[in-house]
Image 1 (cartoon, rainbow, N blue to C red):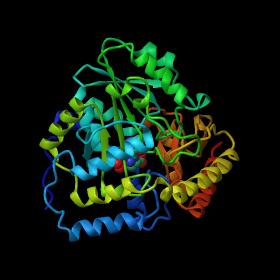
Image 2 (image 1 turned 30 degrees about the vertical axis):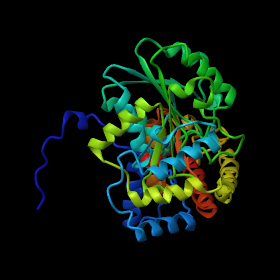
Image 3 (image 1 turned 60 degrees about the vertical axis):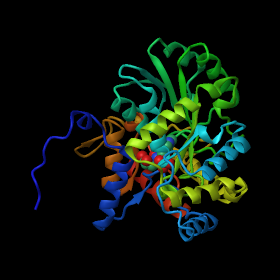
Image 4 (image 1 turned 180 degrees about the vertical axis):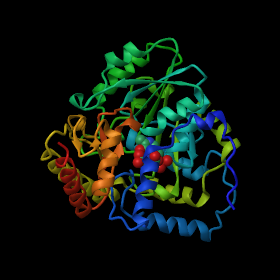
Length: 401
Ligand code: PMP
Ligand code: GLU
């Protein structure tokens, strides 16, 4: 029996659903109904978790590591993460500066809850990852988007940042490599940001480095490794992307101890420690030589090149060449105002729905990422599927006049 729905809280009614998850759900439902869906909607590697990581989880079960873990994470796992931060990012975090959470998503949410007061401004270069703005709004903070277009490789400048900072600014949040654009900030660009940020007291940075390893250019830089930025930076990372562990739900931060303590307190009231078995699997991932994931990264690079070539052949799209992550974010605005019969394409949401309904290819509207001129294509899938999807996109767009 269906009960009559009541009223959800005002807070929840103001919250937008995650557009990436919504599109993934819709495409799953259509596929279940028998529609020939090709989905490039979700940012999730198609690989399976490496065997050595699964073995560590099996061992953890056999060792009965099945009790409540400490809220901030099992000590030996935090120690392994501290070593990873030193090895890969030249960052000195002690284990008590690390908090392990249920995905990088929770790690980011904890931090925003821990730092942002109602009315505080949180700067995010736009396009930005879908959940940042919603998380900020949930605590009454004000997202301040700094636009960066495809012509500038979707990157903001230090001047833009300097002009946006005022006495209400509390936090800056960005991902590099970036979801949804694949852009990567160079060390020089981050040094310029650091110089601007260090001019203001009480200004913090969430550096979301979840795509650190999925990077085709120079090694990425952690902004916390520049000057005194470690005192103001919350470095976010996790295992979902590089180790193909999206379902294990482990992410973490390295942060100044007072911020780590605040996140620990927050998490202690909401979820407690993250899954103990998944934490032990994470330890194996952290201790492994990053070389073990190189074959996956090489595959992503080949796919990037394939999709870049295919997108370049489609008239009217503007694209950058992403240096990392596994997304393209084409500007599709030249199709706005075009039509097929009665269907008129006014914006990127219309276009993504049109491609879903006519060609059964699932993409995510750029609206959700702060850029209504673009659509996001996730290429974390096989070359055959990518060929088919790009053929459909080209065919669908060609029907618009
Ligand atoms: N940050 C970015 C930029 C992401 O794309 C994602 C998506 N997975 C996350 C954080 C959250 O990752 P997790 O799966 O570890 O929660
Ligand atoms: N972060 C991934 C994406 O952007 C997974 C979905 C989500 O967590 O929102 O598609």
